Image (cartoon, rainbow, N blue to C red; front, side):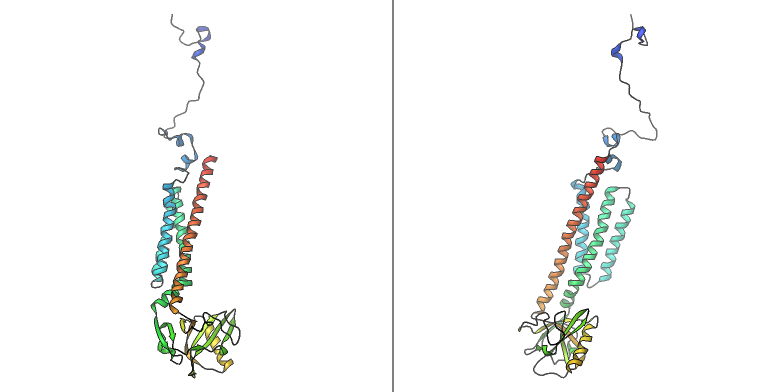
Length: 317
């Protein structure tokens, strides 16, 4: 005989026919079914909600670290080789990079991977511009000024300074020396030191002055640059942009009863101007290499921190 159609207890109920009860998922026409194998979308993991794998894999680290590094190298090269000739071009280039990175940050705000790259690039533009400006102000501007200027050998201290006004480096004739007895330090926050450059002829007007900052007493002493060396007989031209050296020269005229030319030449008293020029280049390069190291640390730590945050979010969800 066939079993009863409904399997009731009184109608031949079979215990082994029972199955565990499970709720039936209601189909929602507005929610697409997850694709086969898409466990992230099925179970709602953190990576599924973010739209990409939360862990930073090497293929994602490459653009995240490589793009800022490329920006830094490009900006550093511009400040080292171009900024002294065309500052406006370099500034416009950096500003354009900042604008593009900021626009990408807004444009791709819904895509975390792109947002991170844009944010790192924006930081790279700003940080590299700051380091580039610092290196230019401290070193590269002085290097290129000396490199592009004229050099005059065997200049007599009695020669009119106007005749070598376009000089960047000056080598004085034998017998040139500093008159340290008439050196003076003018105090205005810092001490601005001046000492006349003379020879045996004792010219009526002092055409050349050795100068320095915080390297002399108030009267009768001068220890700036290579003033200690008997071999020093050259000068690297200094421009008095603040007028402090001019004030010190006027005070020296009043104190010692000497006369200075209306437009004297100010120099750093050194043994070898070429070495001074090369040292400016070395300092600039050292600052840029230090900037590269800072980039490695800042963006490396940033990437590790970002990875840790995303991993924590993944585990938390």
